[in-house]
Amino acid sequence: MEFGDVLPFLENKNILVTGATGFLAKIFVEKILRVQPNIQKIYLLLRAADDKSASQRLQNEVTEKDLFRVLKENLGSNFNSFLTQKIVLVVGDISLGEDLGVKEPKLRQEMWSRLDVIVNLAATTNFDERYDVALGTNTLGAKHVVCFAKKCERLQVLVHVSTAYVCGEKAGLIPEAPYTFKDTLNGVSGLDIDEEKLIVQKKLNEFKTEEATDESITEAMKDLGLKRTVDGFTLAYAKGRLKFFFVNAKGVVDVIPADMVVNGMLVAMVAHANQPSQAVYHIGSSKRNPITYSEFRDYNFTYFKRRPWIGRNGEPVKALAFTNSAFGKNSHSKYADLKRKVNFMMRLMKLYKPYPFFGGIFDDQNTGKLQMAAQKNSEEEAHLFYFDPQAIDWEDYFLNAHFPGVVKNIRK
Image (cartoon, rainbow, N blue to C red; front, side, top):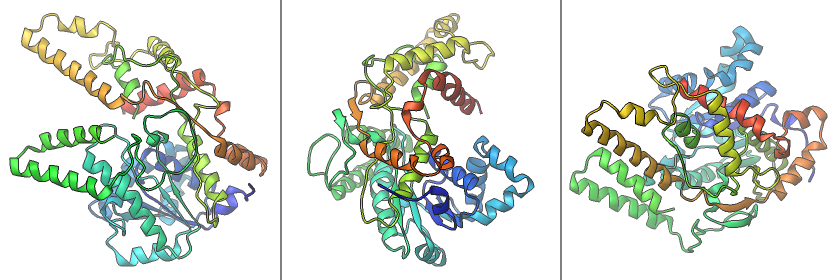
């Protein structure tokens, strides 16, 4: 595998990024703007009522975040004008059809005639999502992006990103291979998307007939999602809400820093530009630098023992916080509090059920070849777009980067 450098490729390119306010999308956009200011345009698709609302969302949820601090410092007073010059806001929603919900014909035509790259990062990764929402975005939305891409006259590459756990509840070495039409996560063949849509619509019609409340509809659709297939663990543990959780202590949890994912995306984008091929890359750690649930638990304990979560009363959250706070309350209050905590635990257990005992290891042969090829390029690029998980010291990463970042983000 041979391909050119990333920075020259990005120069004068027009890129569409869906899911623009999402976690990975923000990092992807910031990286490009910071390392290649000669990018032509980045079209950001995001859901909003109108252009004004979209602009407000971009500012509040993307460019005003600490993530853009370095770019702000580099550009100084030119920061806002630079963004105006490089970013085109596109109001839309990939779940709304093959035009991605873009209502302006002129803007649609502009993208079809100018786009060089499409990066689909629009997805709901909420384990507790309504099934109709998840189906509309993660399944039909991905299909709509492909249809939109087919109309782009000069498109060089389409990059679709999803969690590696789309593989389902498998064990052993999981290959970097595409799924074929009608494959399912539970191994049962014959998945029919149209039938799934009918199931969703039938359920919604039943709720309408029953005059169900919005709250009950939402909960029922979440349960339907669980039947048909942010860091919750860390946050719940830090706040004292999660005292224990059943896992295979020796089991491997595949985690990877987001900047490495973005670097891998950019390198893969260049490697496959104008190549009539399809490739799957697992950008993960479970094969070459695995971390077990036991180690993850120990890092949690070590960090929050040193830096306990400070509760609303200004006091550290302790293991017996619930017991201590229960004294003096009437029995009804204690019962309600306990019930809420039990419900929270049961919900977590249902949501994360496939993962604590997950027995799969994500093969990364394709990713390894991509890394090796990228290392042959310039020394600057090899450093700038590095994504080898073997370089990660997990103890240092969790104690000095991940946990502090989670706490800082939640407190904001």
